[in-house]
Structures are given as structure tokens and as C-alpha cells.
Image 1 (cartoon, protein in one colour):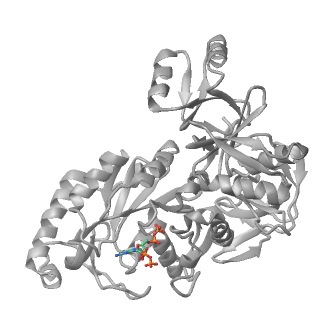
Image 2 (cartoon, rainbow, N blue to C red; image 1 turned 135 degrees about the horizontal axis):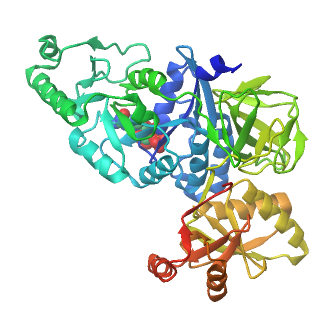
Image 3 (cartoon, rainbow, N blue to C red; image 1 turned 180 degrees about the vertical axis):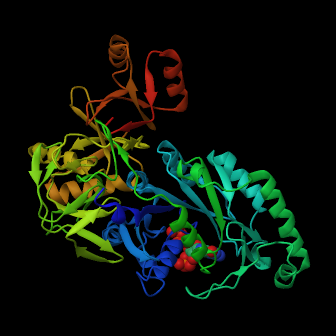
Length: 528
Ligand code: G4P
């Protein structure tokens, strides 16, 4: 356990939310506390604008800039925090899901006015698949919101998680007076637009203390006393274990834009959140404390500049120490590779690093050697499990407009799908190629990049499918029979798995009901 100290001081997490709930604002406040940026607005200017949906080049350009903010590392009170950015844009949801495989915990931001929204549900599903510990931050308390008990109830039911409030708001909107920390037994009074070092809370050990009445008025003080009693009765004492197991999510209330409740969230986060965790592989569980290095690629970002064909592969270090210029074993290619310019990401600057430890995320220059899920080790052969591919939502057939460029097209499609831009399926012995994406935007990106980078010109034909299900069965002949009868709906993914493409819920449910011997999976793990 040579690296215990390094590992224990690290926290690797992501902030996730439905677009507009306040993820970027909260990220920025965290970075301000960590001293990683000096002025507000630095992160926001990199955000993919929600209105820019018609202009994919602009989005790609912004995405390019956002490479710099893909990982933001900063130190806060002696803890080294790696904050992984996730694109808020719906069309890049797959990127977000994969990033969640590289973190040890998440902070989920929910808009206190709107409550649970569509993307919140999907993100939570991914967290549940991996039992990722979640802290919930209810944002925008400066706006008139729902009753907090009702809100928590809704969140619990809708997201199927069990919550535990660690702070409690006193009203919301124009009557918002602040939050009481049930964890620290202190009161934080609301003032709009607080600076990083301005928020000071008042210790109130006993809510019966008349000081509370002086601070918030008798009516609100009594309401808080009543609420606290109810919370005690309903939720009991906070226990960290269920949180770390992903079974219970502590809840904080605040207002990111006003920098209110953010410091309290960050302070509690560094106290209760998990240090880098051990991870499962196809061979065994890799102990995070083992001396030997290993890590996996969870994201690949291409450089859009045609003069630079290189890509950056993001590697999460899972154990040991990564060193610059040392040879590591690339398991899939069965060859040794080394990196002379590995990057770490300190806020907005990329820095070449000499070493990295479990929990760290580093950027490796890649000339086409990596695909998502690839593993580097010090010689052992295994893959990390639990890196899923989710069902695309839009499917289109690839039409090659220039038969002279068939080879280039094949290469382009393979490389782009290795990057995780989209999923590639084939039908009729590989003669028909189908691309599946989460958002329409990706098709434009693919078409553009195939032409610019590979000289291949394509057109897409829309297909009437809405979901892909990966099929497995103990009964091989049943599966073969199914694919024979459903040639129009069955395809093969890049790893050779059989996939069923469904036109509608009705068709899907009918097939599931008619084929009890076949299992329909809604995600596929790259390595099992
Ligand atoms: P996102 O990354 O989750 O998409 O959300 P982002 O932080 O960009 O916030 C979305 C909008 O909500 C922004 O307003 C932001 O200023 C606002 N916001 C964030 N936190 C709070 C809060 O605590 N209270 C209130 N009232 N608003 C908040 P915008 O008008 O879309 O952008 P901007 O013009 O302010 O930059």
C-alpha cells in the first residue's frame, strides 16, 4: 500500500443535472472555492449553448474548448478534487453516461422549482446501475418552489432513491431566509450574491434556543422546529454507510447563483464522499491500494482541427502510479505503449504530468490506438467491467455516395464509433450499415467528419426504429431462429452481439412476451 496517502486525499466526482438546473453555476462556485478560477463566468463561457442546436460546427467548436474543462482538478482544504465535467446537451448524453463510469460519486443538482426532469431520471438510472453514491443539491431556493417535504417525496418516488436531508430551508422565493444544517447544527442566513469567503453560519446546537427567533422571526423559527422534529421522526439519524453504498442520498438546499449553501455542500462533500474505490474487472476485483498500475479509457475526444488528426483519450487511473514515459501493456492490442506527454487538467490549463495516482484522470494523445473501454496495465490481461453502451434513440442507414471511397468509409465509421460518437450496427452479413445515436446532431457531426477526415461522402436514410435491445439466451437455437425470422429487425453490433431494433413499445413488448427464452437487455456492457 505504497500510495495510501495519495489515494486517500483524492475525490473524483461529477456534477450532473437536467440542463438548466444549475450544474455549470455550481461547478463554477466550486472552482472559485478551490481557487482554480478567479472570476465567475470562466466555465460558463465554455458551456454548450442550449440554443445552438442548429449549428453543429459551433457546438463542436465549443465542445473542443470544453476539452479543457473535461476534468477540473483543484485542492480544497488539503483534499485533491477531480471534478469531471459532463456535457449538459441532451445529444451528448452518452458521453455523460460513460463519464459516470470514471467517478466515485456524484452531486445531482435539481431545480427546486421544476423538480425531477427527464434527464435527471436517466442520469439517476445510470448511477443506480453502479450503486454510485449520490448527494442531491436542490438549487434555486431563491425562487418560489414547492414545499420541501413534497419535493423530497416526489424525488424519492420518481427517482426511486431514498433521501436524507442534511440541511433544511426556511421558506423559498422572496421569503427565503436561509438553511439550517441538520448535520452541523448551524444556521446559514440567506444573502444574495455572496462572495466565496462571506458566508458565515451561526451555531445553533439546540433549536429551542431563542437566538433562532431573533434571527429568523418567531413564526419561521417555530416552523423550522416543527419541520426538524418531523425530519427526525421520518429520516432518523444520518448514517454514512448507506450513502457510500449508493442506497441513501443526503440532500442539501441552496442557491448556486447566489453562492448560497455551496460552501456547506463542498465542506460536507469532502468529509463524507468516497475516496477512489476498488473496481471490478473481467478477471478479479482490482484493489485500489494495489501497487501495480492499471486504468481504463472512458472517453475519447477528437480534435476538430483538420491539421491535427490526433485525439485525446481520457484515462481513469484505478490503482498504482502512472508514470510518464514508462511502458504499459495495452490489453486489447497486446502491445506495450508509453506516453511522453500525458496531461493533467488543472482547472483550465493542461499540464504535462510526471505521475498520477488512483482517482486521477489523465489525457493521453492518441493516434487511433484507443477505443472506449480499453485497459492499460503493468502486464496483466483484464478489462474493467461496467462500461455500458446504452440504446441509441435515432437510427439511420448509411448510404455510401462514393463507391471509390468504400475503404475510407469503413475506416472512418470504425474510428468514429470507437470514439463513442455513435454506435454502428450491421445487417445482412455486413452489407447494410446502420448508425444509432442519441441525438440528431451526431449525424451531422459524422457526415461532416467522414468527409473532412476520411474523404468519404455519405447520406443517411432514416429508419423507423426507436430502441436497440441486446439479446442473449441460454438456448442458442431459439436465438438463431429468432434472428432468422426477424432479419429486418436484427443486427450485429461492433462486438458481434445480436441486437434487436424495435419500431415501438408495442412491438418490443410483444416480442418479449412471445420469446420467454430470450433476454432483452437495454444496455450492453463493453466488457463483461
Ligand atoms: P446547467 O449547467 O445545469 O444547464 O445550468 P446553468 O448553471 O447554466 O444555469 C441555468 C440558469 O439558471 C442560468 O440562467 C443560471 O444563471 C440560473 N441559475 C443557476 N443557479 C441559480 C439559482 O440558484 N437561482 C436562480 N434564480 N437562478 C439560477 P440563464 O438565464 O439561463 O443564464 P445566464 O444568462 O444567467 O448565464
